[in-house]
Length: 405
Image (cartoon, rainbow, N blue to C red; front, side, top):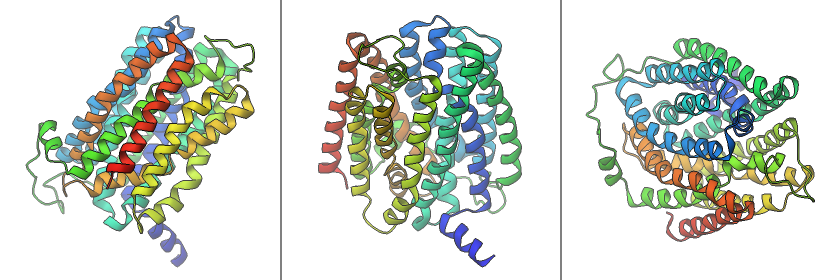
């Protein structure tokens, strides 16, 4: 028991944290079984390349628009109640896709099921900041990031297997059925494990006056946090310009190349699992070091990995080469928990969720342009898309190396 307490103390695993991580696994597993194959599903439903570009843009735009309301709601009614609302919204989106197998329903459903990750992130970060001491925040964020990788790794494997058995249309729909069921189980767990953190309730103190205008929250950010935000925006341009097209490139659905050996849906699931396994291996050692040393070097190295991926992907034209590219893609998570904990450290006490939500609102509204623009760059050529992404990565990395604190 003593050893177990030491391990759980080292990892920051308190009751509410365990409850939150359980929800992340369940909802994330349901989401990832289908989300990574949505571009292929849209093509199967006759949506075409424009629908893929629209979906990619929505992923960023909705993530941005939902971030501030998600953070505000978490600060206003508490994490426990806000997560209940978010899960119900996601389940609604899953069921919409199940019962309406047309590409337009996928786009409409995306307004619901894409909401969970974006709208719940400020709440989960606020929970970590509230439950854990400051010297354990990077570890807490790293555990969240590590656990998130379990569904990210297993979800595409299961989704790829379902597609292999039932085809691209029915396989994805069955994945959404399972997603709705897992979301329902998550609701039960969060009500059982998370403590009641309603502002003004027992042991939670008086309700704070919360800022409803995200522009004022942005204006109140420190110069250090704004510098990080600028660099992060440029790096996300690097990530999101090719994001929706990675699976299309790997499976060569639209741009066949005589020297390219396309992979199957299951092999793409394997590549995703390799990416997530790579990320998982580096989380805890980096968290342990980042909580005790300077955080900037870890963030800079992360930005370097973000930058290299699109260039390496362009030259990866077989499964073996793609394995290396996806290992590199996994390494881009090297300092992501450190970056998130840095946002929490630089946020006003008691307003972490709202500040975190504002940060992501500003970042993702701007970055959504990159996802929409990725479609037009792809229509020129895959090389134009991938090397434009690489250029933004270089600029973002140099900016933070020079300006970051």
